[in-house]
Amino acid sequence: MAETIFGTIDPNAPTPVPAEPVYDHTGLIERHAAERQYLASPVPAWSKDDRTDLRNHPEKVAERLAQMDALERRAGIVPKPPVDPATAEFEARWPLTIANDWQADEVAKQLAAEKALVPAARQANVLKLIKEMGQAAYDVLVADARSSLAPGATLPDELKSNKFALTVTASKGRYLTQRAKAQAALKVR
Picture 1 (cartoon, rainbow, N blue to C red):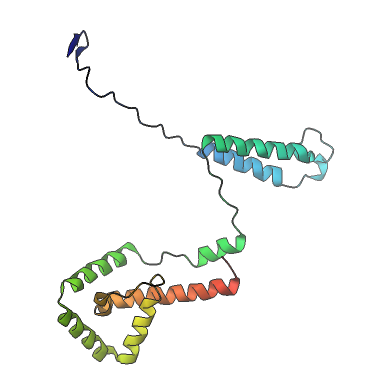
Picture 2: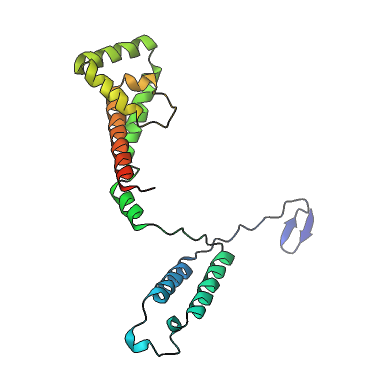
């Protein structure tokens, strides 16, 4: 310990490391996007002979685009891949997230409660569901729920015995099936 006019200093104390600065590149990204849009726009008739209009010089346009790309790379900005308009429209019409937070939380709660039951009680719940809706309708719900899972995943027993969780998962499976059919019809990746 050393005494100074500022107080006691411990020479063995770790030196605080300053946090990495966080840079906001929003202004740069917006400015470059506007400039790229300008450079890609057609040259108006009144500006065809204007030597100061960069758009009249394709080699200078390419040079400026390369400068902007280099500046963004140095700043650590990862360029976004170009989005096909058909893909963007498809993603807007068929989003992958369809369940709201309340549904997801409720399904998780009910599955946790079902998992706490003994297997015989879960089997009794399955038989009660089959009696209530019929074997065919129950089998359709289970098949639809399976289609919401990742390939190779199995449907948990607690899901098969809970009506709310099974219905929500089956509706998600039906949605994903229809989404895949629409995607195949549009040949969107």
